[in-house]
Amino acid sequence: MGATSCPAATVRRPPRPYRPVASLRAGGRICDHRDMETTRFSFAAADGTTVEAYRWDGDGDPKAVVQIAHGMGEHAGRYARLAQALTAARYVVYANDHRGHGLTAGSPERQGDLGPGGWSGLVGDMIELGALARREHPGLPLAVIGHSMGSFALQQLLLDHSADLDAAVLSGTTAADIVAAGIDTTTEVDLSAFNAPFEPARTESDWLSRDPDEVDKYVADPACGFGLNAAGATGMAEGAAATGDPARLAGIRPDLPIYVVSGDADPLAGGGQLVQLVGERYRQAGVHDVTVVLYPGARHEVFNETNRDEITSALVTWLDRVTAR
Image (cartoon, rainbow, N blue to C red):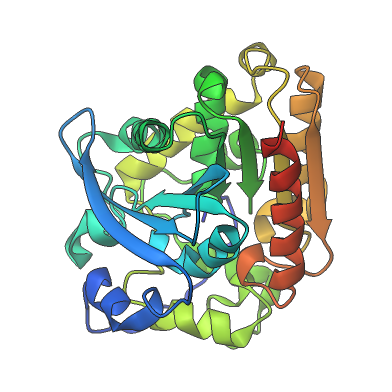
């Protein structure tokens, strides 16, 4: 997920026993999905960091590749259900755990710490994973989905690397430069601040979804719920600053299809206005195929929302159209 200047919430969940994400997944969270094969692998980043990643394959030959960049304070394993829908539609899906997250972090002490490579390293990892996926599936179109913090990274990636992908999806996104300007970069990002519009709330994470079961899964997951540390927040804010620059946006190739999807009750959406602004900026930059979809009442994690089947189906329909070109 991303970060913004919201009133800080004071409720903190008590410490939970830490279990590596691998053990959570081995317990069936990913592996019990029918008709989908999960492969865990790692790759070396440009600075030598070992990045842990996943590939999800369905039956038969894929027609295109989808790469997922997850949000802040979570991990790639949470996207297995979305991957199942995509593999059923004949996409092969790749996702890595960002630096300071999931298996790439490796321990709770490193959660939220992007390490020496920082934010630029995180964006570079996305570029490298996309290149790896293309090497493994030459000739297939590549669509990249960035959720929340992952969408901030994708917005930045598009400024200089739009030629490296065939479609972009921004989920749970916002005008990253405007939001970044309000980030307190002197301390760890406090995700509970996003819950303020929903107080009094059942949990400090109700802002994620209207589905209490999905919220409870997140709360119970020791690999979720933390923010970037001050150094990571600083890097993210610095990277986001360029994403609203018209001169930089003009460098995005005009034939790149872009899909922007959010709930209008997402605290990052600004009631939908900041999401609409993202789409309008791309149109003004000359991008021809920009789709903005706002779901009434939906919160931050649209793929975990109560109407997630509708949202996922619409995404697959869009991907089918743009990857068939």
